[in-house]
Image (cartoon, rainbow, N blue to C red; front, side):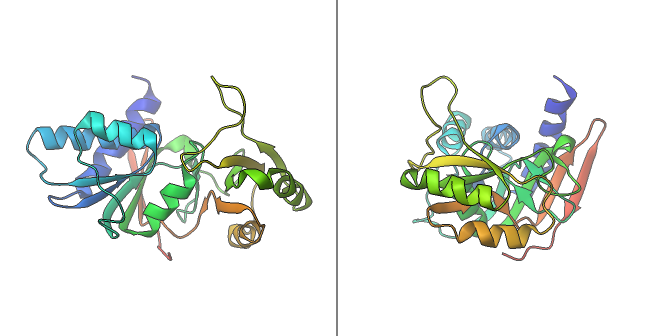
Length: 234
């Protein structure tokens, strides 16, 4: 196992300690969140944890949960989530995040907004002084609005591109049937103002800026683990 994978697993190990019997758990998407899902499954099988229900944020997370033996539910049945464990593409010291590298940002933000405790797990490569440093901001957009949205993003100073699929012809299609535009603004001075402007563009369904959602983050490093507490505002 490389140091990166070891760091991801250590972060996930610490995060799952917050999960208690009978809770509803938001299951994030991506490689680090997948470690948390597998660890929760191990705790269930070992009898350390009982009667939890998972709400997956993507088809990938749902598949991981089924494989791990975690019973699934929905926000329709459980609109309040006790704990969510999710990854991030980038985070700053205030626990503002960029998410959406896996294309699940809309569902991830919905689940995050319903969570009493929202925990981020990542390795130290994801930490940045300012959001946007070598990390584009994903936007989930309606398919008919790709061209006008791209033009508006370029007017705002971004290098914008429709995300293309690997292993299939054409663009990435989200679990919701939408498309993803990656907007590279470079380091962002005012994430809140940028998020506001992006949301005003017709056809933008959700942005990958998760500002004020995270309560806590566990960051795996080359030799240990770092804990960062945030001031949740959402």
